[in-house]
Image 1 (cartoon, rainbow, N blue to C red):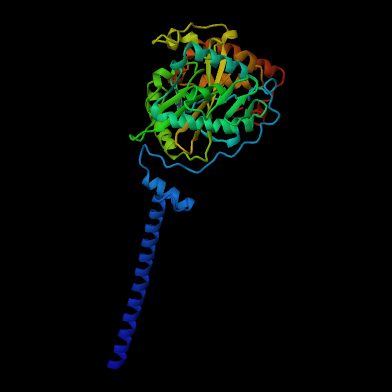
Image 2 (cartoon, helix red, strand yellow):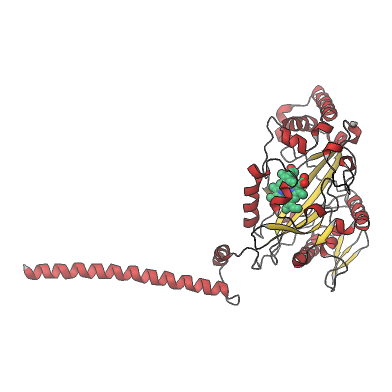
Length: 412
Ligand code: HEM
């Protein structure tokens, strides 16, 4: 009996030792593999898997420092049949029916081919920008020294993208690109460059451009911009500011409650592979694309809707809608914010099916804060009276309200 129990004890000790050995080996293997991954990611000459690189980047991220990514924006397909005379602006009608106006970031993903949108309004935007550069120059455009590499990178990206997307407008050259329509040549390799690279970028597209760069405080700061057609705000008031102050200084409604946290985490997480867009809309009561003088002179510190003339005739009401895009540049990690303004007389868009009714409903849905921000007290009565009458005309000629969603899905 004693011998039997001795054998039993030895056997169970063997099992304990065996399983403990396996557990210990697993721990050692895991430790060695982690150590290997860390070594790899710290030594750029050793190739790493994408997965481990991303994981390590997030864990090791030091605010204000960027590890260059190897991502390259895919070469875009040519915009189908693009023509500087006949390609109309995309018909963004980015407002929603009431009864409630929801303040959200309103971001949607987009295809990288659609990054920059150009159309037959190009000549007017190009001319307005050129005039503003002569008249106001550094009041509208600036690049902080620390943002210079990012502005150069944006210029390189546009030089690769634009001739591929709009081959009848731009031609790639050995040193940069030519604008075939305007006759301008851009040399992007000479040093020093002829102009601030963000100015060169601004001349190429219809958009205003802003570069946001993370500083060691972990916040994204507005450090380079060509803000030539802003309508209601001035680069000189916002340059250098972090994202939050840009918005709080402008009293953007519900920024703290509804936007601040989401925006801050969006900026931290944005990947080079992503392209996001959002649209907004305003009413303007003069037809100056660059600066809405109705709210006061651009050089007047106290410009505001409060000083604007009330109840201008509907002929002066313009629908102003921005299509904004966000992407991250791979080499410098800067976030590019593009602001493309679409600008049409209210009377023109209100004649489109459903638009008058929906815009009237949207304007009525603004809470007091949004109405004040958008200047509604100065034009609401005239605008709503006109939109209601146009909507009624559409109903009288048989417009079927049930079909609205099929015909016009946001943002159209
Ligand atoms: C996720 C990105 C962003 C979101 C969701 C956002 C959201 C908003 C919103 C809701 C407004 C009020 C007007 C509107 O409805 O559009 C606004 C205004 C504004 N935003 Fe942004 N924004 C973003 C990024 C930026 C960036 C990168 C800049 C950099 C220059 C910027 C500059 C401004 C300015 C200058 C105004 C006008 C402020 C004023 O009235 O003084 N925004 N933004």
